Length: 124
Ligand SMILES: [Zn+2]
Image (cartoon, rainbow, N blue to C red; front, side, top):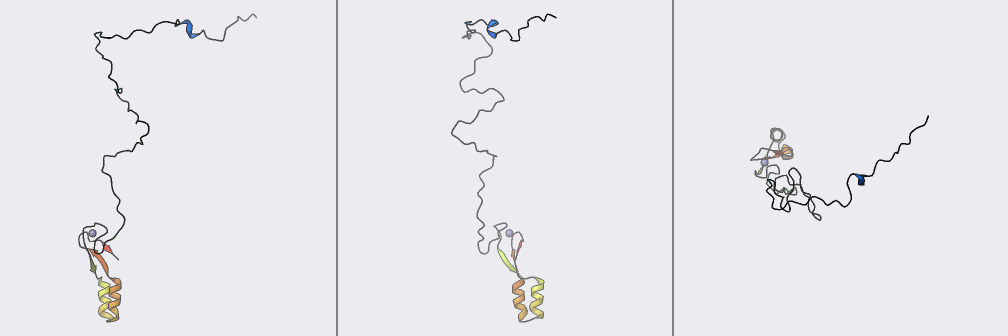
């Protein structure tokens, strides 16, 4: 029942690599097919990190979209901003104006819509 003494500690790495061994000198001027990369060269497939102090803004390749405030100019279509809103009386309003004249005119004015002459959007 005599267990041999086993050292749990692995041998030091200094045993494999003798200290003081000089690294292989770089081959300068040798006929190598792989020249050393120039300064600033990034390896293939890696993205260089942005320089410190600058915030990275993702660019989606589109121009900056300026969101205009919802200012509706008088007579302009807020949907397409091209057409002009025109008063469009609904059939129900005209019918009320005829049947209930003259009070029906007020109903007709209340039921009128503003319709875009370009895209045809209706705005109450
Ligand atoms: Zn429009």
